[in-house]
Length: 333
Image 1 (tube, rainbow, N blue to C red):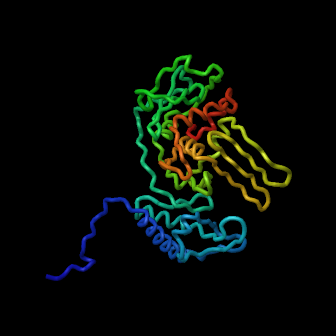
Image 2: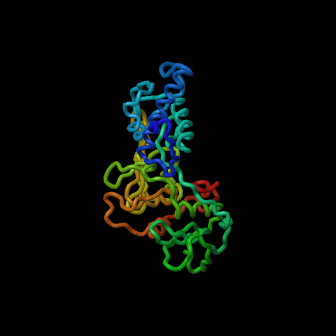
Image 3: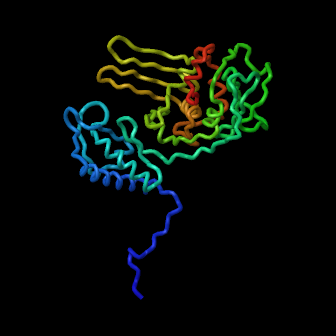
């Protein structure tokens, strides 16, 4: 009997998803294929006026594509120096969608990022969407650390609770449980979508933040495009401002164990934003549905997430008597 050659062996379809190393190998293969295909289609014009669209690589993508021969243009200055043809990565993205069923790279603006496989969010058709004015209604949420918090949809105040409340259930709230000085705000917010961010986060933490120093975290600006300074626009946080004429300005917002520091650059000085403190970081992650690591570096004591939200809601809201507050929420339409 003749031995079977590799051409005669029937390949069995793989049922398990690809590992990150296999995804990175597929990215390199797809990019090389795209370089050859786009090079045959038209010559690369990356220099001079009238150049074709160019993109830079994120730090993770640059590490994956190290030593891969890709046409590039070197431009000295602030930020990434290597600029690559955008059409190469657009073609590579289509090839990855055919081979993997999804694309582990994303072309956003003039940058290329490595992303994780998106999770399928179950569409709960039976969920009752709260109305804009719920009277004395509240929303009971179960947070990722299994602590529970009660959100008053009239005043947007959080209060830590312990009991037998079910997740996502509307419950009644007596007038004595509401602070007397809390303003009644007619918020037109999608509370169902907001509850999903708190209870079922789906965005990978590594694609949203990175550690840059002791209790200092820098946001990764990618296709997720979340506003890290959102809480400073929602709550009136105490802080400091340093600035002048024709120079960079520095702004600090203080809340919980740290806060947010942001620099607005000028001239050759760049702009940046840093989150200070693990508790401030975890609070931002809850509002945008970002998965939190169980343990953060340099964090000795971890308080329940419900307690963080309760302490944060003690701050006054910006413009409490206008509906503009709803437009600042990440889940509002």
